[in-house]
Length: 317
Image (tube, rainbow, N blue to C red):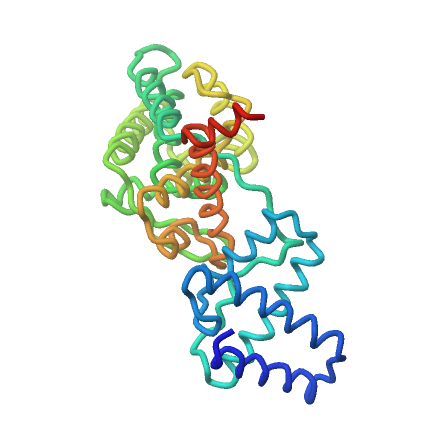
């Protein structure tokens, strides 16, 4: 360990002993944890005291990949948190990189996503159906608008079905969404989403005029049900039906999976994590970081499937 890193570790251990009354066994465990972290960081050319959240996240993921028990992972993470909070409190760092790390017991399964080609197939089929002039055209135009909006914005299904009708008057490239905690955020619209929304709005207006509807209600996607707008369950069912017709796995697909695809595809194409957090309406960036794990897992699978050395390894087994 570098002399500077060693000095800070010793100062940390002295503080834990004098101020927190840590036992000798506890102090020894802290030392082992920090020495292990230092060893791993050194291999990457990163000083212990300069580790970023990404560095520490990769370290914790490595522990999990090695099969270390969750209880042991949690103990090591506790050591990291206390050490880096100590550095922050002492003015040796301007931040605490452990603040965004998830505890092992809180780790969630990776979200299901679908590929860009599957989304393209779904949208293309919805668009083709919307051009068929028959008694079901309005429902299909509405479905096209729903799916285009969902994939273009990544909004929650509850936010989607309860969009106010006034969004039709905005005629802009952004959509104002009211999310959890009544917080508002702006999300951009794609050209195809704007077009689908415009077509739906015109058809909705014609139908209301033909039926002489005096009060169409406040929602963009109204319904005669008690909620006043299209129920989430109805949209989810119709989405699965659309997926089956488009040749996309209906068992996997749901509105939430398309939201996942929106985030994952953005990150895969170089979008900033903070931007994706804002678009999704996540209050905590650690929630958004799950999508970076999705990308890492997909990359790992890609290498294992296509790299010639990985194939050689399989042939030897």
